[in-house]
Image (cartoon, rainbow, N blue to C red; front, side, top):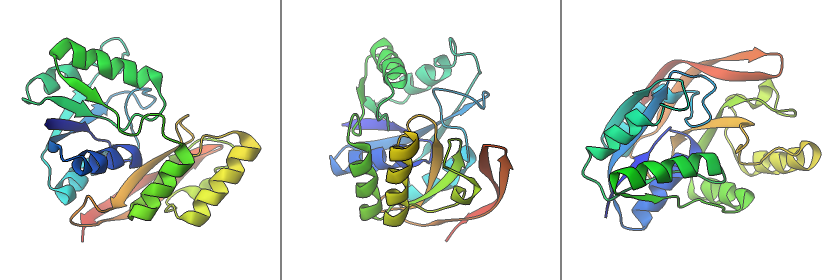
Length: 220
């Protein structure tokens, strides 16, 4: 089966690529959407530019799609791009967002391909543990939730960090996988990659939220 993977460079889309390959599917393209809206509910925004390096590290061609900020039209460029790839379906890292999955399913229905979400409704804590155990190097690229302060920016998730996320979930109710927008991530290395991404960055923090700003990025 030939599939394209919606790819942000974050943990969920990266793990979905990993899972698709485990299933024996031919991931022919990675598809990154560059949204003009910094508050997009549909598309990942922080550190999205690193997908070019990530695609090179993985060894799969990257298709870049620019989309306008208006929700009612932001799906159209993605639909048109997917329609021209000659694929049987798409793979996404959707975990719990009905909003995202319904819209992706509709795109696929419109152009006659399948939609696959290998992470859908998995236990988020178990899923994060799997990622860390499999060797995914997941860095926090942005955060916006009570309990996640500036010290989390640039932090790489390990078992200690996961235990802290558990405590923050118990205290503040945050989603441990960041599904509610509590944090964004980027994957610097993993079993799906042939080379590791190295980054130099600065932290940008404003009152209760922040992100990392990449100054330099390269492949080892």
